[in-house]
Image 1 (cartoon, one colour):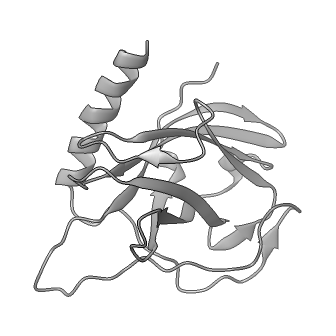
Image 2 (cartoon, rainbow, N blue to C red):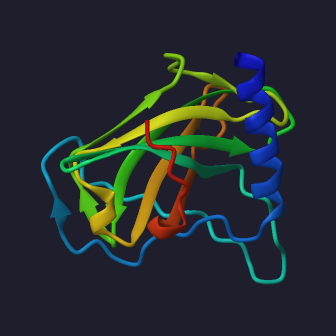
Length: 172
């Protein structure tokens, strides 16, 4: 089962890394939805110049929606990277937005309980996003995160914006 997850992760990672423009940061946050862990800090994705297209260090890949309830939605995520070196990294999240509005009732858990990940070449990290709202009432999902390295390398801010209508549904 673990090997199958890694193969799926690898296939998705290669597909996404080949695509241009995997995510963008929203221009503004106009309010909040619900009540919960949002701490109000914002993270902007690093921008590259139009002349050079650099692969992003980390990308968020929404694998599929696993549960939609009237007051809760669960999604499986994959955090992909293109780093070839082995580094220990802690992934944290600053904000989750629906239609540009901050969601306060959200939680992201690691599938296998890890707190710190090792950036093995071509491998991603599987996580579950739980939102305290029904995602079907919105059109766009944005997730903002930070990868903090244990070797003193400056933290890397990343984000992903996704159209909810395009997310695959694998409802249990």
